[in-house]
Amino acid sequence: MDPLVHRIRETYDALPLGERKLAELILEMRGDLAAYSATELAARSGVSKATAARLVRRLGYADFHEMRQQARNHYHNGSPLAELSNTLGLEATLAQHLAHDVAGLTRTIETIPAGDVQAAVDILAAAQRVIVVGFRNSYAPAFYARELLVQVRPHVILLPVSGQTVSEELSDLGRGDAILAFGFRRRPPVLGRILRIAAAAKARTVLLGDASLGKVGKSAKVVFRCISHGARLFDSYVAAMSLVNYLGSGVALALGASAQQRLRRIESLHEKFSDLER
Image (tube, rainbow, N blue to C red):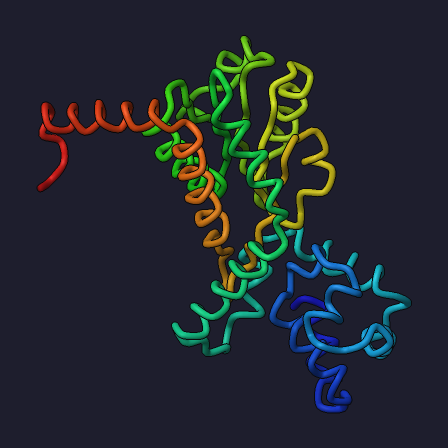
């Protein structure tokens, strides 16, 4: 079990009302705690910073940094096996699952500066070529992003190609290219190497991940940290998929007539191939 969760559960009944409100928020956020400061958590739960400090000490931590670091270390593991002990014996309704995902989506969107969204759209719309990268669980939102972008602009490729390495596709990476990378927890080290290669080649990178990114996103032009900790055993990518949808629409609007013409050609080809069920 997550040590922080265990400490809260052991002391919960004895907590004053204000500390209990903050403790409930921490339990709700769990692994996403690493993305917030003590001031932000206090504000979100409607308590003072002094109340937050008292709760931290009551839970046995020297300060908020120590508590957050422990949460970060546990969160970075991300193994479903590690989560299983927290899940067994806990009844969670579909409504609670929905509420958890909605809360994660809301917190993600609330913390994204509007300027970052526009910067990402500009990068993806102006690039000569967009290389979308995602490994393991990050492959699903990467695949979705590629499917949206290829409908409104040319030269969008997805990595990795099944059974292949990435060196060939990255060999001619240059200043006019863009990388759209997905780096959710339990990602392989190769992603960080790809981002460093992109930076050296002067390609601009948009990176979507979670609170575990740390220094991985240092070379990216725009970084989005999405809430991804699931309500139960597995991580949730609701926030990431929603953001990808929004970015894809933004790119279409930015490209205007050229995106519209491409969509028309695609629809015409669908008709000729009869490849969609009516």
